[in-house]
Length: 288
Image (cartoon, rainbow, N blue to C red; front, side, top):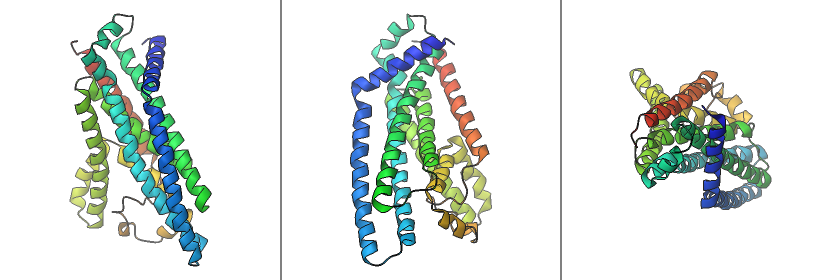
């Protein structure tokens, strides 16, 4: 592996994204979305306060709005990452640009790793900027701040990087549209598998839980999503929930009584590295 070649491809990827102005468009849309969310939350809080509702209950309501906003943003972020990464290599192959690039002393593994690193930087920048903006606006207009905003933003970023990695790996063998579509579908199936596993536990259909959990392990984005939800929940809600049978809210995809486990984080890192390595091997064996 040539570190200088990897960094050169990374910088080239960043320049391509900047030239297409995609990141600026996404950030602009995030500003508009944050302002819209801020306006809605302002109206809700004003109505609640005018009706004499306590600040504790207002904070609980705002926290649920913030969780729902994070849920919507997770899908936007995952789809943006998938369709940004899918053509990163597949597009070079289809356009013939890759032949000119490979004429230089750059290995195929260096190309995949450099593309992946550049796209991860773009995705991380987008996730952090948008997450900080949305949480900051909500905190400013309502007075409610989630207990662990950094954890929540990190979880959303991890979901996007996992989706990005799968799209990039698939793009080494499939057309860009197919790679992006499959990645987004897998992201949705992982979340759906988490909901079904929780519902199966709630209905005491324990025999179905392992197969549903398998969907979550095939792509670990739902594991990270539960950590995002936990980081946005008020401590009062989590404290009250500890005295209730967990099966009472196990099927709720917008509530998590515990943070993401170390095992889940470890599996996520192993999964991302494994998928990236598979993509490198697949691309190395492809005839151009």
